Length: 344
Image 1 (tube, rainbow, N blue to C red):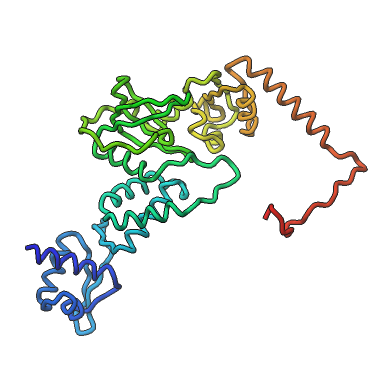
Image 2 (cartoon, one colour; image 1 turned 180 degrees about the horizontal axis):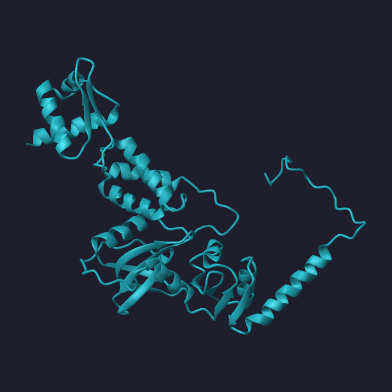
């Protein structure tokens, strides 16, 4: 039985490595007769692999397209290439693929031999991403991501050191349930055993390596059906000094395109308006954040934000008046679009 199973894996590997094979070629590679090749092909079909065949002297075997994806066999080079690609996608370089890539990476990391893990780690250690001029994403070690994802999947307790928003570090015993990401951060929704309640943790605030996974836990009913919305509300209702409610004169889907879920929560009022719930420790930051949205809005709360908005508007108006050239003013010519300078 073991010999047959090993031969089936070898046959599958051959079929995946080339477009088509003749029966004689497969028999020679496997060291068996043509009849055994035919029986092994039938076994692969029974396992769900769509092995096609054409009769005759010029015929052969090849893998077709099936209704479902059967398990794939990867050699060392292919496994390393896939792992590196999944690391890159999980870091957020391909929008919309982060969570899917993380799930696939978690499965692959579990199966990689140590020699291949070292090669993937060496690539990550010597590669620096080129980010834009804006705030870069808060870095999270992919190994930490995959470890937490595996704990969520396997329902294993975790003990970790965590630094809160005030910079205070303490030890948390948690039951991890779901990972949620924004363009800049990864969050973990977990049951905090020490506090007896649900908590949202930022993965970039985890300190030190995770300890080994703990005992299994029974899954709990999540605090909300929409976990992403729960995290957005948890973030926007953080204990900021100022909690704001802003009536935006634009549809919720339009405001969402210019907002991060980590910066606030949107609540639709009607087809043309929505309320933005957000917070900050600075009224000046709130004023600029709202002005940059590009929509008309009304301040519902807090009232002390209104004079700050007026002051910002007056300051911007003065800057615009001071910078406007008069009718006879000529601005110096700058470099054209082909200037070989820093803007290129």
